[in-house]
Length: 583
Image: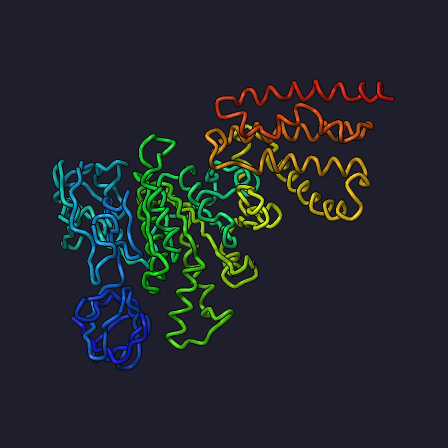
C-alpha cells in the first residue's frame, strides 16, 4: 500500500511527498479520519490531490494512503429510490444532519434475487444473470470488467445481501471471478456499450413548447440556461415528473441549500402519474449543496452520469437532470485557482470546454453489451450571471448540446410559464424527429412548427413598429399577425404546472391543438384578404375558446378538439356576409 506525507495544504487541495508509486485519478485516504480524496497531478517525488471532504484539522506530516484504485462508486439495486451526496453516500438513512468525515458507503442491504441463468451456461459482460425485487424491478448484470466465461455457480432464488457473491464465472484460462449484486465502477470512465445509435424518437416532456417547437431526442443533450428566478429548477422538476423516461437521476450540483431542501422534501411526496406509485421508486437524487466541500461538487456530475449509465445498461431509458452545471464549473475554477493554473475566460480553467464535452458526450442512445436498447438523455441547467448567455459556461455548453431552451427573465416576471424564449431557443433534433411525428398522425409537423416560429419572429418586429406608430396604423395583415402570435403564446406556449388538466399534454393532444390553431390562422388570413377587419376575427367566440384550449380540453376531450374545426368553419363562413351587411 502506497503512502505519502502532506507537505502543503490549501482548502481542498494538498501536496504530498512520497517515494511510492501513485497514479493520476487514484483514490486516496487522507489523514487520521481517512478523508476521501483523489490524485490529480503527479511530480517527480510528490503529487497534488483534491479532498472531497472538509479538510479542517489536516496539517503537514499527516499520512496519505493510496488505494491503488480510481475513484469509484458502488452500483447496485440499493441506489434506486434514495438520496445521496456527490460521492454516492446516502443522506437519508441517518439522523445526523451532515455526513461524518471519512464516512464510507452504506452497510449491506438485502434484496430478493431470482437467477435467470444456470450452471454450465455461457455469459458475457453486461448480460443479465437474474432479477432483483425492488419497487421498480431491476436486473443483475455481469459487470463490464469481467471477461466472458462459463457459469460454475449461481445463488438460489431468495433474499441475498447486495455485497455477498451470487455468481461464479470460469474463464478460458481457468481463472474464476465471483461478483455480487453490487459492483464498483470508476466515475470518470464511461461504461462500455456495443454500439451507439442515432436519434430515432423524442423524449416526451408533456410541455407543448418543448415537444412541438424544440424537441429533445431520446439519448440527446439539452441545455436550460436562465438567470435567477426564471424557473430552471421548477421546470426540471416538472420534466422529472412528466417525461417518459424509465429512470430519473436528479443531481443538485452546488445549488443553494434552501432550494435543495425543497427538492428533497417534495420529491418523496410526489406521485408517479404513470404508475400511481411514489415517484421516488424510479428516481435517484444526488444532492451537493453550495455549503458542501467544493471538490465533491466537481465529482457529483461524474457520479450522476455513472449512475445513469448503470441503469441504461439494463435496457432502460434514463433522464439526467443536472442543476446546475454553472456551479460545477465554479468548482473547477476554485480548484484550478488553488493549483495556480493559468486562468482562461472569466477565470475558468483552460480545460473547461473539454470537461463539459466529456460530460455531455456520455449521453446517447445505445445498444448495450447485452444487445438491448437503452439511453441517457442529459438536461443541464445553466445559471449565467445576470442572464448573460455570452459567458463562458453557456457558450461552451452550446457547442456540446443539440437542444437549447433559453429562459427569459421578462417572460418569467410576466408569470409566463414555461418562460422559454421561442426566438433564442433551438433544437438540432428536429429533422431526426419529423418521421416520428408523421407516424403519430401529423405528417405536416415540421412545416407547422416552422410556420409558428415565423409568426413569433414577425411579432417581435411588428411590436417595435406598433410602439412607434400605434397598433391601428398598421395594415390589417400585420394586425392579424400580432393577433395570431398572441393566440400562439396563449394556446401553445403557455402551460400551467399547477393545473390538473394542463400540466401535461400528450403528443396526441399536442397534435390536435396544433392542427386547430393552424386551421384558425389559415381561415383568418383568408378572411382578412377578403376584406374582413382583424377586430372582427378577434371577437369570434371560437378564438376565446382557442385561447384556453389547453385548460378546457384535457386528455379525455381530444375528440372535442377536432370538433372545433366545424365551429371554425361555421363562424368564419358568416364573416363575409356580416361585412356585406355592414356596408
